[in-house]
Image (cartoon, rainbow, N blue to C red; front, side, top):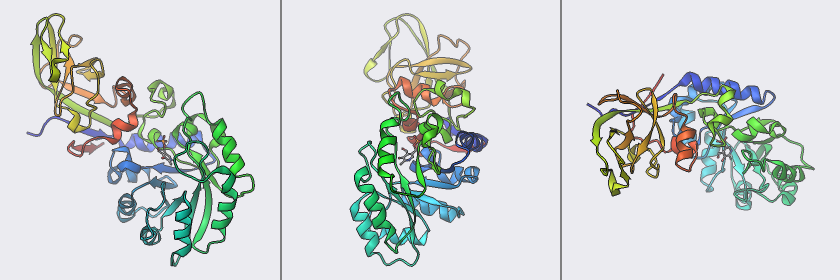
Length: 356
Ligand code: PLP
C-alpha cells in the first residue's frame, strides 16, 4: 500500500480562474505564468486547461521546450531572458520571446547569427532593483534594440514589488511612465496583485501567476475570497496513528509540545519531505475529518501531529486536508510566516498527483 498522501488538481478551477482573471483586465492579453513547473502543479498536467491563454511565461528553457514539444504553438515568454549566447539558438529554434535586462544580452543579440528576428521584452527597473535598465536609459536602449536586425517586436516590461500592499504601484508607475515617455509600443506590467487591484497597470499584456492557481498574492485568502477564484491544488492525507496523551507528555522531535492534560493527538502521513513546511509552528491550521484543527509539535520528514480535541470521532484512516478546498493554502502559509507561492511550488515530486 502506498502512503496515503496525494495531491489532486482541479483542472476546471484552472480554466475558471483564467476566465475570472480576464474579467479583471478585459482589454489585455494574458501571459499565464507557469514558472517553477507551474507553481508546483506540473506544467504538463495543467497547460491544456489553460490553453485559452494568449501565452505562457516561464524561466527555464527545459520548461519552454517541454511546452513546445507537448504541442503548445502560441507565444512563450522567458521572464529572465537568456543566460548565454548558446541559449539564443534555443530561443530561435523554439520560437521563444525573451526578456532583455542587461547590456551583455544586447551585445549577444547584436552578435548573433539568427535567421528569424526574436521578439524582445525590454525590462525596466522601475524600483524593485532586481532586473532591468534604469528608467533614464530605457529610451536609448529601446532605440538600440529597435535598430538591431536580430530584434522583432519590442514590448516594454516591468515588475511590481508592492502591488499587494498599501505602498501600491504609484512610485513604480511614475518610473515606468518616465522610462516610456518617448516609446510607443506595447507594455506588459501587471502581476497578479496589479491585475486584481491596480487597473491602471493593465495595458496590453498582464502576467498573472499565483491567482491562476487560486491563491492570494497578498497572502490573505480573504482578499480574493469574493472573486470566485478557486484553489487548484488540494493536498490530502490520512491519520495513520492516534496517541492518547496525559498531562506532561511530549510530541515529536525536540519534545517541543507538551500536553497540558489528557489529549488525543493524530499522526498524519505528511512531512517536510512531501513539501509541508518544517517550520510550521504548533497551531498551524489543518482540516481533519470535517473539522479545522491545528498541528502540534515539530513537523518530521514524513509525519506531522494534529490535535484531535475538536474531532473526537477521528480515527486511523480519517481524512486530512493539509490545504486546498476546505483550507486555503494562504491560511497555512500565514501561520508559517510565508506565502502560498512557497508552499505550492515546494510540493515534493514524491507526492502522487492526480487531476480531476
Ligand atoms: N512576472 C514576473 C517577472 C515574475 O517574476 C512573476 C512571479 O514572481 C510574475 C510575473 C507573476 O507574479 P504573481 O505570481 O505574483 O502573479
